[in-house]
Image (cartoon, rainbow, N blue to C red; front, side, top):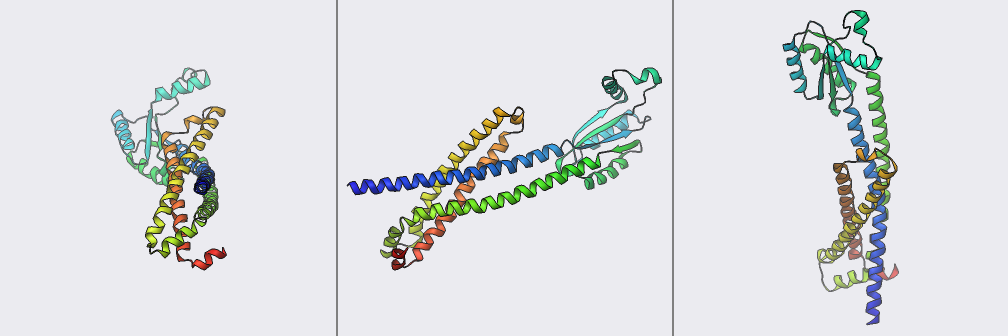
Length: 292
């Protein structure tokens, strides 16, 4: 009776150790996943603040302004379109300068314009050059088409570089994590290799033998995933408390994406590891098991 209790205690202890080990590995993977998803969202946010200005001639009619605004708003590339009249423009300039240039010039030197913010997919110089042709073709009243080519190129280059670095880091850590989790699962199944051998000797099919081990390790993976998610959530809350304004960038969708990635990785890696480990001992000769 005592032997059974000790054996059960050892199995539970080994399972607990396995869950903690897998949880810590998934926690690290979760941090990388968070950084990747966060960087992607930040890149989209930055790109959606990129835009261009369409300056209009003074002789443009109200009908033409309405028509252009409608065309711009219905285009695939525009996220937000704002029309700034001559009066609005002079008011903004007066607010910035502290005095009205119209008072000493005798006329309003500014022109009406459209401020267009782009959808992230179009926030690159090649797309904007193509958009410029389409905008100029909309109306003969387009005077200028302005955008910051250098800033757009700098943002895209930096985002591309950051993406490559994060991807490389993610791949390396994923391989390391898979190896660590795989070894943890293999050690757990190794301790039960004689049970696998006994089941095989009494005529159990490979599928029947694999099933409980795979199921058990997937459950371990799910439990480990939720522990890792709890650690991640605590870390994110800590960062939110330490850095003001950081919580604005942390959306519900971002958190759900990261948590889903952690759960999927926990299930997939433990499933693959358990599958390969049980197959190894199913194919192994009985004599070889005693030599291990």
